[in-house]
Length: 96
Image (cartoon, rainbow, N blue to C red; front, side, top):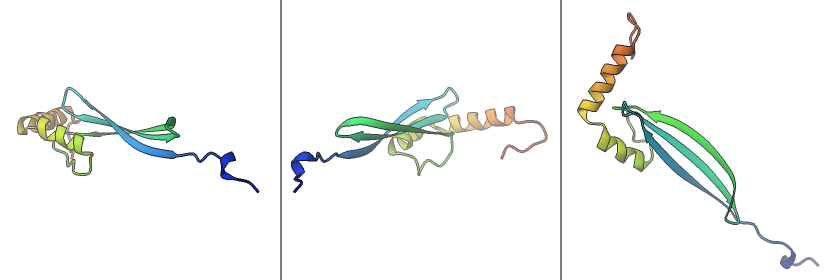
């Protein structure tokens, strides 16, 4: 008979880490790291990135991104970002 003393039960855990970076034009870059650990030792990590721009709906973003956007994106910042888009848009095309 085989007993459990010969088999070590391994515990896998997952968690998510976020890192935010604010660019000069107040765009927020978000990096999500999905971290996998086995018995407390990291065995895997994958990254996903996205950006959110001034005035964008951030209700689907992590709470910390929502907090940063609420503090950073004043009406003046949003207007400046939209002006920057318009200034960099090719003539005769609609940026929206």
